[in-house]
Image (tube, rainbow over all chains, first blue to last red; front, side):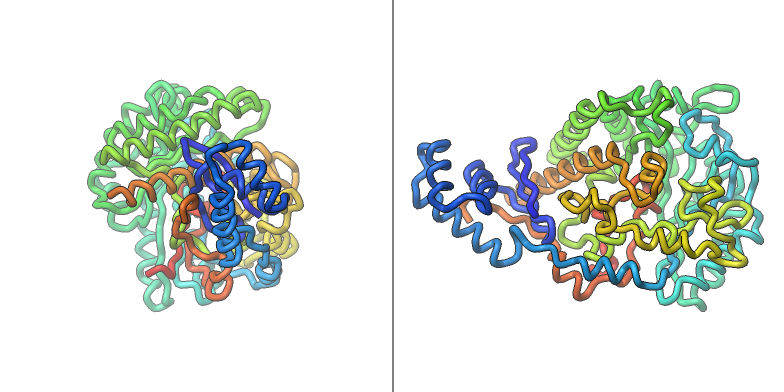
Length: 458
Length: 47
């Protein structure tokens, strides 16, 4: 399967199953489009009718190049991965990541919060050290030969339970060497309680820090308000700047959410960049379609345009020496994930679990609070094996809607939670999300094409 | 090739032979928490 598209002056041909990316001129673009359908003479006739200056020999030369690429497995390659998908379904689940809900409470009161202002449709609660410690032991016990273990301190707002976070990090560090593990911690925070002590600790111990900022002040303060209704922008921005400046090059993401009310979200990303941040992420809101901030069908063309605008602006800024990264455009074409990862996806419910303040296990943070998706607890382990098996079958090859989709090896069949919340089934798809995802991948690959061209010129 | 430039990419077919160590990051653990992009996860074997 191939996917051809034109964007920002680039003609791009993606060979889905080999992962090859080709940048071609208009003539080759058209020839590739006809290669499998039409005879050689028909292709020559059509090309010469569209491009009068192109000779028969030119077309034949291009056809020869296409055939060489096909024979080298870089164009029109066959799908040989069904066996890989089957292997993934049958393998024993090995746990390697936990989302620790250390605080089901929050010092902000954002109305668009998927976690119901941190409460996840339940009671406010803080995780005790004992529960967190048992969760870390549970992770080590079920991680088999995996060395790198990921723990995200999540909420609500994890800084509402900061002492326990620090104690848990200290505990993990005390056991990791003997256990043959390497803990990688992430802190996801709204920034309200960041101070010098948090900055020092987070920059020492956290492999990644995710900082919530929605962009421009008026956009951020529309939703991200405290319990008195006051916007948080002016309070958090200086703290984020201080934390990032002291981070010493370690990873972080400035992460925002956009909604129907700011479909011009590129302005918000650029606002972040203009504030000096260079590792950026901006996600579409996850909420009920009835919510006034929910994205609509009419928003789609605007969002497509915004993603394109962002890609073009990123290229421009990179050329000017002031580039930044955008999470969804970070495609590592040369050293990215192997085919197993591309098919298996996020591993929710199998490799990745969320732990509530009470030690209950869920397939991921987006299922927390839904009793139908309670999987067990950190003392007794996974009790709902049927649910675990169902999550184990979710991959790029498990959904009929994905079979002819060129993007399936970039999204692995999509997010199970999004599929569940929109189609009622984790084995379904979230079509709106698919459309945005495909646009983002087209932009991401185009940016790579532009960067390759920049390298060539240098 | 005159009309086709191929960007250097990982050969997914070959990665079926030596991939699958499972040490790479869980995709949702990084920035998004709301989608399932995998292509931006670096391979731990690259070093």
